[in-house]
Amino acid sequence: MPRSKRQVWLTFIALGMMLALLPFAVDFGLGRSWLRIMDLALLYVMLALGLNIVVGYAGLLDLGYIAFYAVGAYCYALLASPQFGLHLPFWAVLPIGAAVAGLFGVLLGAPTLRLRGDYLAIVTLGFGEIIRIFLNNLNAPVNITNGPQGINQIDPVSLWGVSLGKTHQLFGITLSAPHQYYFLFLLLTLLVVFVSLRLQDSRIGRAWAAIREDEVAAEAMGINVRNIKLLAFAMGATFGGLAGGLFAGFQGFISPESFNLMESIMILCMIVLGGMGNIPGVILGALLLTVLPEALRYTGNLQRAWLGHVVIDPSDLRMLLFGMALILVMLFRPAGLLPSRQRKRELVAKGDVAVQEQASVYDAKR
Amino acid sequence: MSLLFVENLAVSYGNIKAVRGVSLKVDEGERVCLIGANGAGKTTLLKAIVGMLPPAKGSVHFAGQSITHKPSFQIVRLGLAMVPEGRGIFSRLTVAENLAMGAYARRDDAAVRQETDAMYQRFERLGERRNQPAGQLSGGEQQMLAIGRALLSRPRLLLLDEPSMGLAPMMVEKIFDTLRDIAARGVSIFLVEQNARLALESCDRGYIMASGNITGAGTAATLIDDPAVQEAYFGA
Ligand SMILES: Nc1ncnc2c1ncn2[C@@H]1O[C@H](COP(=O)(O)OP(=O)(O)OP(=O)(O)O)[C@@H](O)[C@H]1O
Ligand SMILES: [Mg+2]
Image (cartoon, rainbow over the protein chains, first blue to last red):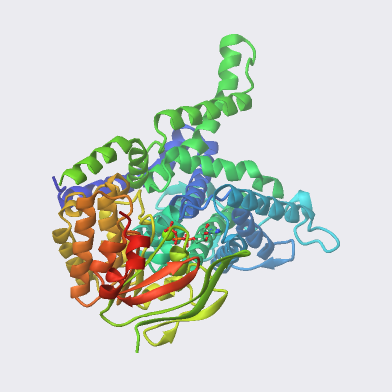
């Protein structure tokens, strides 16, 4: 049954209202720190959607994705902090960071064009580490990144002369910094979602699906496999750089430590858990994996209250539950919590050899 | 001038010489077949023609221009499509998505839609299963799909690598009927086949290949009547 246009609009309006009121509810109910977690969650949604282009759409396993987040963040930090005394405006810094990250995407993509699967995974993993190690060591002989100490006092995001780092009053409503960042991040997340959606149904999206399935056959369809793969790397990296720039402005401080391998794996887990290739799934995965670990921190206090002392360290518990959750999802929902149409089919297709046998027999009779 | 013109083409895998200086041609509107034993180098030759393997020497011309060192995605766009050995369908994409891939390089969406519908009429089984993953199709249906997909790129010349492989006799008949139909509509055909008799019966001319060389050529009629060919390739 086709849903009426009105119903669709009403859903949209309700969703919009909910998203607009959410930060106030969270701030009121759970406190400011949770509002900051929500801001970070939005950054992770952007990151996961970016990686989803590379892994989910084009099928290129990238284990060094966090490097692009780092590149975006460091671009922002170097161009808008006392490090070099540069304070370029936000509207210039953010696109520069995203573009430079995109360039790094091509830089990673070009030499790995012939690699697939495990080999690609290893090279991308190495790439991610190289970037981090560079950032760690580029403080001598010339101090560029300030090494392991990281970069401090990064300019907060500022739009039309309004700094998001300060509290503002608007129509009698008090908007703290995390509130304002929430709305900025939400807007940009929606943009990333929109671009992802459009890409999925475009010719480019179809070409990605083809190379994910079979590169040789894709080339035989007239698809320029090389360019299409580079485009996937570049698009994914651009989203990563965008999120990175926002992260730098939001935190005001970055260091190489924030961009380690574990982060790359975390983002990959978000899309695998949520449903690779499916936008709602990827968003769900990103939200779950940012919010749940934070929630588990409270188990420390709970344990103290109930048992008198902390039996399992919350951060250990976090990894334990996280590993268990992944195993369970892979066992019972191998295509993710909200699988994409295609992934679901892929899994069905594998189990359906019997159906195919039957069809062959049927053929022979016909 | 010939539509496809291959001159002295050689292809090697490392130091294995799989194709050793082959020359052949296919004219506009012609149906030509290539027969030969296993390992003769037929597949290698086709791959080199469509740019999937780099030739060691020699040249390939298509529709008046050299395609010798062009990447294969450009060659398809010139109107030279191949149905590869083992079909090369996207088994996890649906039948409809597979057909759409065939038309990837085309921009005339309306015509593509029309031709896709015509394809479903011709191959009813594909129409019935358009939303199923192609991997669930039977071997014969997959072959139909591979041919239909190649046709949707609107080729001037269709290369087919053993389309009858592993299919029941009924299905083979159907595939060859389809090929005759396609040729009747002006698409030139270059067919590689193990089933030599059937291939020659449905083509105008034939080449015979052995150990990387062309060892015989002629009109289909003369080849069918050639006792040496009969003994070597028609089996019982
Ligand atoms: N990728 C490869 N690497 C090395 N040698 C190869 C490769 N592919 C084919 N060959 C060799 O090249 C020769 C020709 O192979 P080709 O596949 O072209 O034969 P064919 O005529 O298509 O045989 P069939 O009728 O069995 O399909 C064979 O000796 C084969 O072993
Ligand atoms: Mg072969």
